[in-house]
Length: 123
Image (cartoon, rainbow, N blue to C red; front, side, top):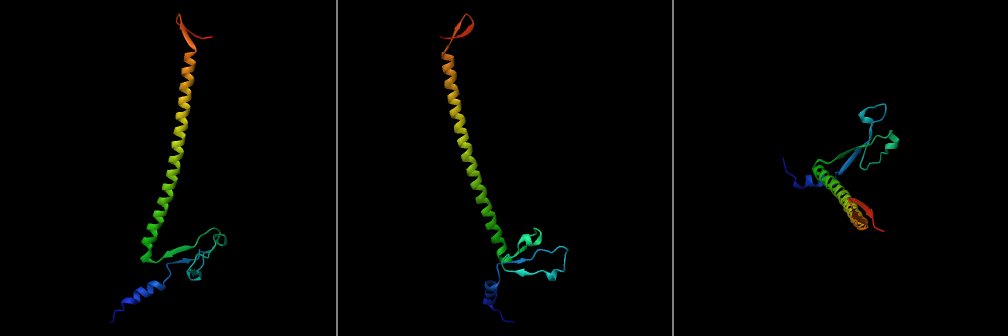
């Protein structure tokens, strides 16, 4: 048996990275009646909302999953940053209102005098 080192590499280069299996029809038909294609050409509207099944080459699967997880992490991180920015702005607004409240309270207290155990407004 001869070993062809480039045969496996050539086969991988010509294999599709992923293929799609047509959604199951309703009522179910034989598996052999379903078609495959290189691109997801199956519209869920044509199959009562069912989606095609994606199959990925085994040698690429882990890489694809890792990239999908990284994309999700990046998306989640962007959401967290946006929420943190909104929280900081809300905290700044609360601080501004608190300062105004203290100023108002000091002004109100300055307009009051204590006489004989009762508090009266100054005129």
